[in-house]
Image (cartoon, rainbow, N blue to C red):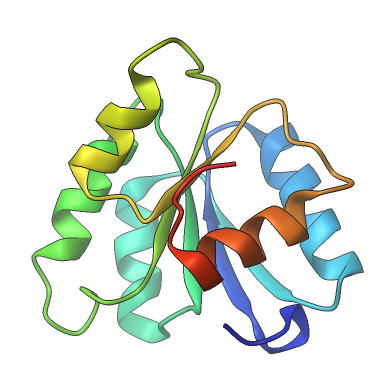
Length: 131
């Protein structure tokens, strides 16, 4: 995958602190980052511009990350956009459930700001799916 300076990342998370940290780290690494706090707004934004990939929180009140993933994958024009889960779920079996659901990878919370971009690059380049 391209370098972070060529990325446009859409971050979907209902927690402002998480949005802020992810956006700050990505922009520090010269990526363009857009944010939204809901799945509904994410779907609206996808109609305007396709990002390079999405970072999607699993636990959101209005629409879970799983529900959002399903809605995105229903659209032909959005189907190939990589979607990476960002989750605090680190229990045994959670990674497998996330990958079985169809996410292209996942990043565990709390976010490691020192390795985030490298971790994303690894997921996008090798399809290993998890960091």
